[in-house]
Every structure is written in C-alpha cells, then in structure tokens.
Length: 316
Image 1 (cartoon, rainbow, N blue to C red):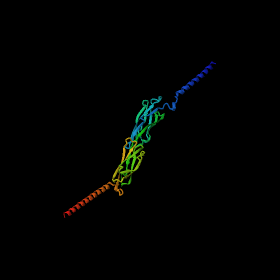
Image 2: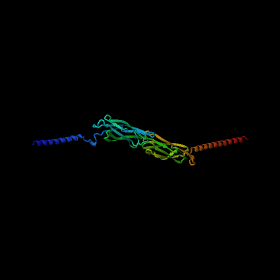
Image 3: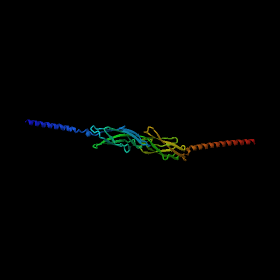
Image 4: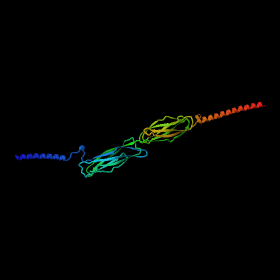
C-alpha cells in the first residue's frame, strides 16, 4: 500500500517537473521581435544634412549640389563581436551624374560612416518640376547567414529659376514710301528654366511714326519662342530714316533687365505726299523768296528807269 502511494506521488512529481522544463525550454528559444523583425537585424539610419538643397543651373554651366550623408548602424546585442556586416548603397537622381558610394563595413567598434554625395544638375534643368536624390541598398553579415533591405532615403533638390530671353529680327531695317504701312517681326525665345511673362514696350516719336495695336504682355513657356509683329506707318511729314526701339522685360525677374531690339523705318516721298515734305516746303519758301526779291528788283528797276527817262526829257 505504501509503495502505491509513493509511486503515485513520484508520477505527479515527474509530470510537474516535465511541465516546468517545457516552459523553460520554450522561453529559452527567444520570443520573436515585434512586427515580425529578427532580433539579429541591425537598425540602419541614412541621414542627409541637409535633406533639401538649392542649386542654380544657368545657360553657361552645370549646377553642382552636395549632401553630407551619415550612415548609422545600431549593432544587435546578441551579435557575436567577430561578425562584420557590410552595407551596399545605390544612389540615383534622375539620369544625372551622382557620386558612387563604396561598400561600407561595420564592426563592434565602427558604427557609422560619413561621406559627401555630389549631384551634377545639367544645364537649363527646369525649375518647374520636382527633383530628388534617392539612396537605398542592402546589408549582409559576414557569416552569410542573413541579409536585408535598406529603405530609400530622399533628398530634395530645389532648382532655382533663372531668367533669360533672346531677342532678334531678321529684317530690322525696312524701306517704304511715306504713308505706307509695313510690318516688323521680332522673335523672342525663353532661354531660362521656367515659364515667364514678358512685358512689351516701344520707344518712338509719335510725331513721325504711328505704331499699330500690339499685345503689351505675352506668355512664354520654358524653351518657347514667339514672333511678335508690329505694324508701323510714317506720318506724311518728312521722309527719313526713323529708328524706334522695342523693349522686353521679364516680369518674374526682380532685376528687371531690359532686352531691346532697334528697328528702323526708312521712307521716301511719293507724289501724293511730296507736298508734306519739309524739303519741298523749304524749296517752295526759297523759290517764293527769290521770286519776291526778283519782283521787287524788277519793280525797283522799273521805277528807277522811269524816273531817269523823265529827268532826261526835262533836260532836253
């Protein structure tokens, strides 16, 4: 009887011992990390300082922008000291030239690396679009057992606007007759890297020429060119070379630079306008004066001659 009691007690004791050993064994295996992450995964940070850069790209040169990259790697606590892990990073900024990053090695004593990332922005890159530097990659342990992905880190590249237009005219000198209307055509092209509004103005002498209606403001998208026409007529006052100047100003440019094109209207008189010409007027005045002088001399001579005849008769 005593043996049976002891045997039952031993069974309960063994069962209890097995139960507690099972719990300890389960806890010793290590619980999975939150969000399904492995405790052996390193925590990698890509830090750009600053993460927003401005750059100017003019018609004459590329723009270069530089970011300082800091790569920080927090070592897992249960990772053996002799393990080295490597980080391979890729860089991209559209299809521009970007600094390549060598493979970075981390150890128990090296937990961060610094480097400069340069991006060469091509000439005349538009300021209207968004531009980014992207950095991403992979990490690998030296024992080859584990590897992982590094999420993309972005740096913003702000292309500052610059303003420039080309102004030209294939026929800046036009000849015609006084009173006839002609058309000048001036070409303007937006050579900047953003859309612009251009104000137009004309410097001229309204006493001599008449300028027809024209738009005093025009819009030009990046790279767009337009032909602006001006209808011009010289008033029938005098024929000559009459210069006038067309002025263009980019409204968005704080410098308010003026881009000008000189035009010349050369006119000759015709029969219907010759009486308005100052040369003809002077000629008429001169002829009139000469005629008056001649008539005066004739009258004076006539009177002087008549008086002399009377005196001669008296002497006889």
